[in-house]
Image 1: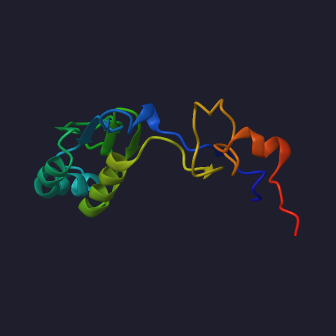
Image 2: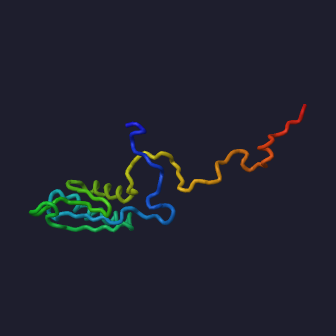
Image 3: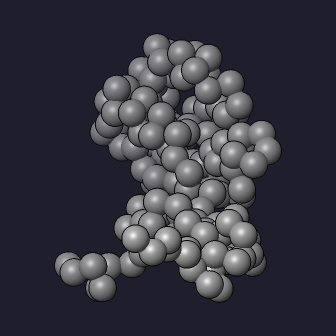
Length: 152
């Protein structure tokens, strides 16, 4: 795809992160799984082994987990799911390591779509004084008459 056809935007900060304190975009992570379903083996292993490490590494993300029966399939079992405050997705048949990678990626994301950045710099308040040039702070007599040359 060409540069004109792909979406682009200027560099911005989500909720003006960096201006004040850092606000993580992922607020809550909820893990729903069946205690007996084969598809939820990785989710159960994540809760037993890696959930405490994830909670220590990301103290500002609230982590809930629930052993629920029949989440989406009526008679027992059900597919395990990772429910987020602003996104969600199924984690059926994923290993504990894959769940850790997904949760870490979501905790570190900004929430913006990945698109091409037009310029690596941008200001919301451009200068009204004009651009700088070599004669900006020089006396104005130089700009009107120019330098006087001595005859040789």
